[in-house]
Length: 558
Image 1 (tube, rainbow, N blue to C red):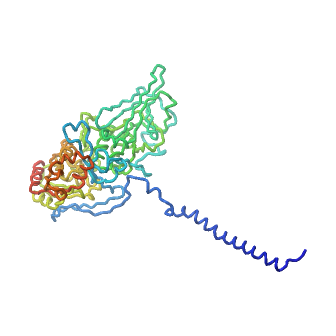
Image 2: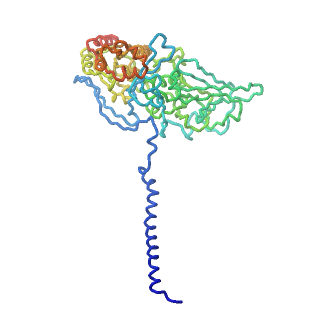
C-alpha cells in the first residue's frame, strides 16, 4: 500500500475541523435546550397565570386601618379602631340596588322599588360594572363564582360528621313519599320532599325514589325550580341554577346513595344580587331564618351558585342556623340521601316576614333577637335614661352623600344628641359595626343599602330616611319604611326639595328633572338611576331638617 501523500493528508484536515466544530455546537445547544424547556416549570412567572383571568367574588386584600367615627365636638368624640382582614374587607354596606317590586304590590303606584344595587346596562354580561349604585329592574346581577377555597364546605369525601353516614347501597323505601310544591307565591317557589330522596348536585337533579308498583300509573311527575327569592325578576332568575325535581319508580334511574344524612336538607342559592347588603338579608338571610330556624341547627345546607366570600362574611349567622358543613352542590359529585328536603326559601315581604305564614309563627322580633345573639349585641330596646340619645349618621361616599355633614352634626348636637358619623370604611367590619349601631338610639341616612343596618338597632329606636329628589318616595318607603314597624322601630322620612339637591348645579330649573320627574322615570331604569341616584348628593336645609330630628327625639321613650 502506498503511504499517504502530503496532498491527501491536507485534504482530510478540513473534514476533521468541521466535525470538531459540529460537536462543539452540539455541546453548546443541548444545555440551552434543557434550560428553555424546564425554565417555565421552575419560574411560574415565565408562563401566563390563567388563574387571574377566572372571575371570582372574593376580594383578595388586607386592610389595616385606624378609622374614627366622630362628631368633632371634642369631648363627645367616639374613636372606633377598625381592623379589616382579608375575609372582612368587603364594602357591601355601601353598594346599592333598585329593583322591581313584586307585581302585586305595584297597583296604582310607580312601577319600581329600590334599595341598593349596582347599575349597568340591561344585559347580564354588564352587570358587575358599578358595584356602588342603586336601581336595577334585574340588570345588575352577579353570578357568584366558586374559588378553590372552602369554608365549612363539604367536598370530596370528608370525615363523617354527626347527622351523616357513609353507605354504599340504596336505602329502604319510605312509607310516605311525596313532593309538595308551592309555585303560587309572589316572591319564591318552594318544594318540600318527603321519602327516599337522592340529591345529585353535579346534574342539578333531586330524585324521589318510590317503590315499583304494578298498578301504579306510568307517569312520573317533574318540577323545575330556581331556589332564589326574587322570582318576578326574570333576568336575575336566569342566572340562578335550575334544579329538576322528579319522582322515579325505576331502580335503573335511581343512583345508589354514597352519603346518607339523618337531618333534613335545605337547598338555596347564593347567586343573584348577593353581595349587596340589602339583598343579602331580604333575599337570603331572612328567608333562610324563616325556613331553617325550626330545625334548631339540625339542618344540612346545600348551596348552588356557591359564593365563598358571601358564606365567609355571614359565617356568624350561618353557623347558628346549621351545625353541619355547608355543601357546594354544584361541585359535589356524591349522591346525598335524605328523608326530608326543602328546596327554596320561604319569603313573604321585603326585609321582613309574615308570622301568619312562618313556621312556629316566627316574626322579625324573633329574627332580631337571633341577630343579637349572633353578634353579642347588648341592647334589646331603648330605655329612658339620663344619657344623651346617640344619633348615627350613615354618610355615603360619592352619590347620595351629605355635602354639609358637619353642619348637620352641629345641628344635632345643639338639639341634645351625641353624634356618631360612619362612612364606608367604618361599615366594612360587620360584627363590629353591628355593635356600634346597637349602641345608638336614632339612625339617619340618604336612601341606600347602608340603612339595612336598622336590623341592629334596639327596639323603640328611630330611623330617619332622607329621600333624594326625583319622585322616589314610594320606592324608598317600600324598602325601609314598611319593614320598620315589624322591627319595632319608629320610622320618619324627609323628602328633600330641589334646593337641597346637587342637581340644581347640573340642570336648569325649567328642566323636566325638576318640572316633571316622572317623565325621567318613563325613559327607563338606567336614565332614572343615572340622573336621580348616581349623580345626586344632598345638602340638607338644617332649618327645615331640624323639626325631623326633634320629632325623632320625641319618638324615643321618655
